[in-house]
Length: 378
Image (cartoon, rainbow, N blue to C red; front, top):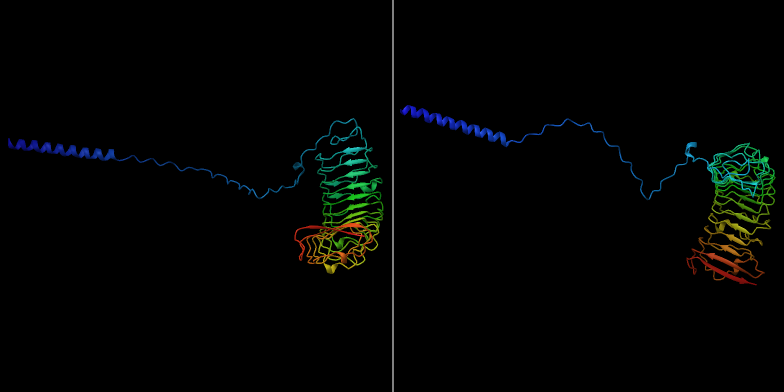
């Protein structure tokens, strides 16, 4: 009896132990979190680099078109009553001798009607003028090819135009003065090109030319021939401003009325340079390298001279000038004189006149700001 009770107690103890073990195992399993299953590696493409935006202060540089496809298409003109009027141009019925082809995105010279006297081709993309460009219009009097991209001109193109009076080719890419220009020309405008070569006979026999504009080019003393202007016997205005001259241009015709030489590197003027100029009235020599040493004492003793510009040079004294001078510009020099009275600066003062003398950036008793003095003499 006692042994049977003993066995029952042992069995109960074993069952209790097993229940406790099962409970502990269940608690341990339920208390653990399920670990996430690892994902397969992704083959993600790298994103392209973001282009760096230009700084607002840095303007975007426009690239010049290199291929014909970069040019905009030509713009057609309005319908015309003239059968020979080029589609890209305008032929006004009230003015049959004029042909307007400007601002049309043209890349070459169109076929010009024979009746044309006045031809307007400015503001296009024309890069060359071929030998046959004007074969059909030999009575042209006026050609405007300004603001194009002309680099080359075939020889004898303009020689076939014996009545041409005005040729405007400013703002192109010419590197030399066109050859075989007609002797009939009265005005030749070649400013803002890349001209560095002026052939010795470039203006030969052009005695009708009154205006020659060569400013904003690359003309130096070495490529400006000694007698290049010799035949221009009726030249009134010569503009050589904004080139790279170090000397005054030689053999200027004595018919000259206006001489513009601003923004060169001219250091001195020969003593008798203006002596034979019987019509000279306007001289502009601003922005050069002129000093007192480079100006002979009587160089501006020209009775016809009315307006003399010597601003932005290296002068330290007021140069002597003729009493007929009306305007003298000396601002932005190194003038230090007190200039209490200008009598010593006049060579001749026989007539009553008004002289306007503007001086700035000077020392002594003169203010640094620009001022205008007026003197009257009898």
